[in-house]
Image (cartoon, rainbow, N blue to C red; front, side, top):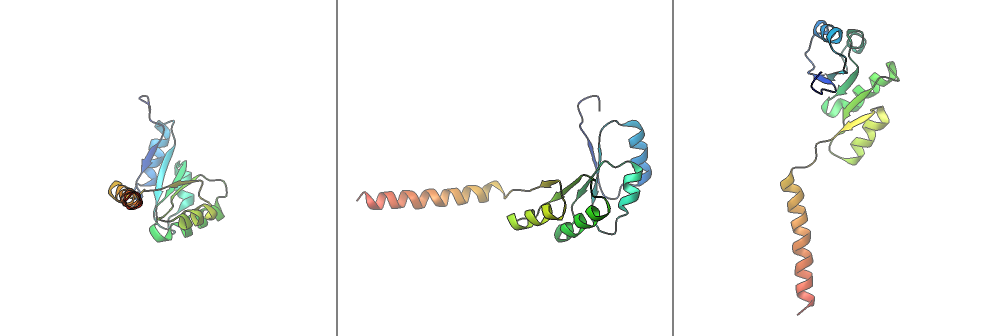
Length: 128
C-alpha cells in the first residue's frame, strides 16, 4: 500500500476470515473474484470486499444480474465476453466496468496484412 498499490484482487477461494484481516490492515479496495451465482455475496461484503470482479464464463451476465438485484449500488467489474453484443448484455445486466481480452496480436496483424495485400494487389492491377 505504501509503495503505490491502488487495490488488491483476490481469487474466488479466498476465505472471508482472510478478507476481514486484510480489511483491518489495508486502506485500499479489496476486490474478490466471483465465479458462481451460488456465492454468498452478502458475507463477502460484510467481510470487507469493496468490489466484485465477476468472471463466470457464459454465466457472467446472470451472476451480474443477481448481484445487482440484491445490491443495486455495489461496484461490479465483469468480463464482457468475446462479442460487442455480449459486452452490451453484461453492461445491461448491471456491470459498472467491463474487462476485455483482445484478440491475439497475430490475429490482428494477419487481418491488417490481408487488407494491405488486397489493396496493393488492386492498385497494381489498375496501374497496368
